[in-house]
Image 1 (spheres, rainbow, N blue to C red):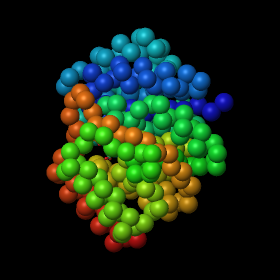
Image 2 (cartoon, rainbow, N blue to C red):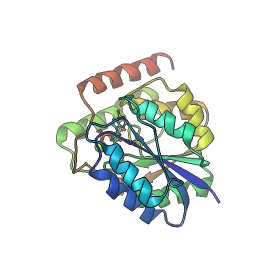
Image 3 (cartoon, protein in one colour):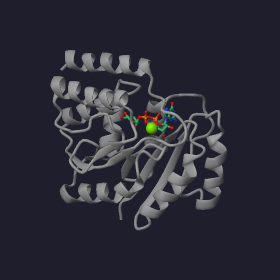
Length: 235
Ligand SMILES: Nc1nc2c(ncn2[C@@H]2O[C@H](COP(=O)(O)OP(=O)(O)O[C@H]3O[C@H](CO)[C@@H](O)[C@H](O)[C@@H]3O)[C@@H](O)[C@H]2O)c(=O)[nH]1
Ligand SMILES: [Mg+2]
């Protein structure tokens, strides 16, 4: 039976964490999985909530990273993949923007063609984005448009982070990725294509967070543009 390791990076997600955890356990009750919560020493003490959840669901089902500093999302994913015991890795956000009900659909899609990667896509028909203002919609569409124009990796949602990977595919991509911030997800797809990994897509609806705040800032966007130009120039 396949085992799935779900990596959940958290930074100030104390309200969202119990709800997302409950929904993951509900929607994956027929699957063998572990949940790896990678907190960056959040000032709101998310880690204390995570420890309580670990007591409820068991230390074999919820794995926590020992206390760290603010190390960033890239290192959170790296820790998750080094710790994972599953043969598949699932990345998702902890803020309820990614609904766990889509995970069984991703698992089904992966099995259909034995894909190396399945991406949750907001930009397929039946997918969508809810709750974002115009600026955020333009940024997301713009980032996808520019990446497609320059690198055309033939995936409809390049910046989304809700994905399922075969463990070996994820390890190979993450070892080679250079981008640290918002461009990370996009670069992973570019790398996956260069390694000839197969990629399937499942439509998802992304709902903007209700509790807490997005960590995407102006600096991240400038970095995205620089990373994209770098990938284009080294193509
Ligand atoms: N451990 C850790 N977790 C972090 C950090 N920064 C953010 N996170 C966690 O990473 C997830 C996504 O962060 P958000 O701040 O909610 O991102 P977003 O603006 O909603 O952006 C989302 O959509 C983008 C595509 O439009 C994605 O590119 C991005 O990865 C994310 O999925 C959340 O679970 C958040 O707690 C960090 O430095 N460290
Ligand atoms: Mg978010």
